Length: 216
View: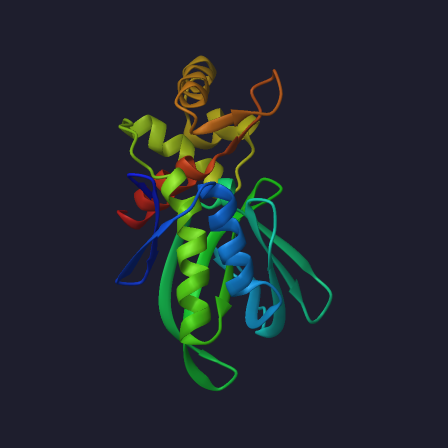
């Protein structure tokens, strides 16, 4: 964040104000200095389409990319956590390699599927990774007022139902579904993939759908 010519950096409960001529470049360089080539534990995908996956923790190396956190796992998988695609970041204490550790749970997408990547490391690493990823979460907060039909459509998409199957799946008129798609695209909750109204959830939409499902 920026405060009267300063860059405001929040790490947990601590806030540091730093003067910099180019705020964005300074912030990116700072996170690179703090996190580039750090070794952490990663679990990916820990959750896919709302379903917990049978994946294991493995060592991974992280790097600050162009507006992203890039994760290269020991098994050779590459995961890009684009800040513009971060739907939410949660913290929890879980068992990692036989030890209780702080874990960061970052929600994003792979293709059209909502997934979670879990990361763990030292307290210092987790603090800085969380601060970096929360920049993306802040961009995509679910602060949109939607009605019940809108939420039903979002929850169906979040669960992996094809946009073309939504009318049959929800027992809803096709024209009504098309109108909902149009409204949600205008609200930047969905993005249009094809003229046929194939849509995928944006981070804000995934947040709303996730919250609605948790309220069930």
